[in-house]
Amino acid sequence: MGKVIVVTSGKGGVGKTTSSAALGAALAHKGDRVVIVDFDVGLRNLDLVMGAERRVVYDLVNVIQGEAKLSQALIRDKRLETLFLLPASQTRDKDALTPSGVETVITELKRVFDWVICDSPAGIERGATLAMRHADIAVVVTNPEVSSVRDSDRIIGLLDAKTVKAEQGERVEKHLLLTRYDSNRAERGDMLKVDDVLEILSIPLIGIIPESMDVLRASNIGAPVTLADARSAPAMAYFDAARRLAGEVLPITIPGEKRGIFGKIFGRKAA
Amino acid sequence: MSIFSLFRKQRSAPMARERLQVLLAHERASSSSDLVSVLREEILAVIAKHVQLDSDKVHVKMDRDENVSILEIDVEIPLDAALQAA
Image (cartoon, rainbow over all chains, first blue to last red; front, side, top):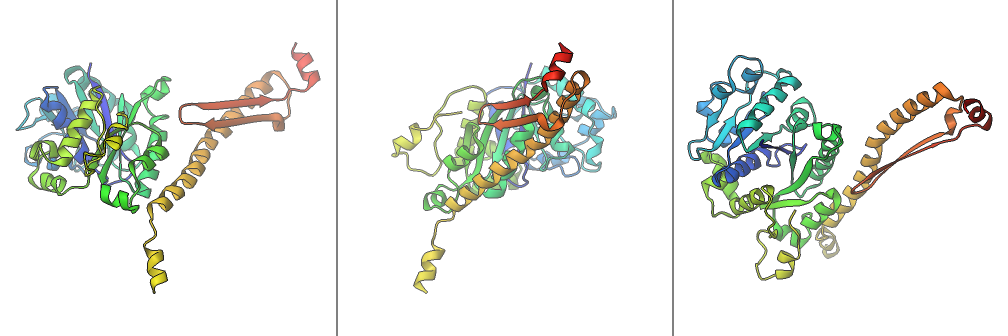
């Protein structure tokens, strides 16, 4: 049985889709079978970020409403043969997602894939709650900025209340992914530091993605950043985060900080 | 002018951190208070089926910590009601 990961944040524009694509590609890169499901019905973008926008025929809503088979809606990535995408519908509204339909699709995907990554829409409405509903693991994407941290706190509360795991008295494994981090600005005192965000949200850290031109460049060309330039700083940070998701214990490095500061690099425990 | 530029240079991250801590402490408490009032009503209804009691004597409190939430229920039952039930 595969594991279900929800990539969520509450706030929009913090990097959910970028992170879903990058982590999915990183996991598929090491041979795992991965599907990324776009839950943003009406405003799909994962197809575009992954460069598959012209190959969408059927979508999640078609599958849920019985208009297409799951196998017809899945799009195989052109670069990695173990990476698949299940696009959202662009034309319907979010009410087209039904709880039982989503459950059926997720159950079927779990049987075939090692990882089912649910790319959540922003907000706390139906699309977002359905994306997190069946999650085993949650990646909470947060920018070091007040509104993003506040919304993440709200989402963490929902993960503890509105998921199947929570209702069964279990816990969704929650991880913080700090994105668009600028260590220079944090060092100057103009941006919340890693430790500030960790202390406020009190969930373990799975990675720090530096603010970088490489992220925009990757989406411009329609490739997950981990495939566009695997040696770039954000790509390496995503590769490490993916390895931690898979259970490896790695020290977390703060991108942009000099490697000489051993205390900072090795003093921090991985999630 | 120099005094103003000194103020402008003041670091903003500590303020962000402090504002968030205050706000979230408040929001966390209020989001669970809905639950607390629902619990209070339902607990009261269950006990009232068997024992006559004063609704002011039921206290429900929720404490949230990093790792655990503690639900504290304090019900004061009048002596004669307790005897009736026994």
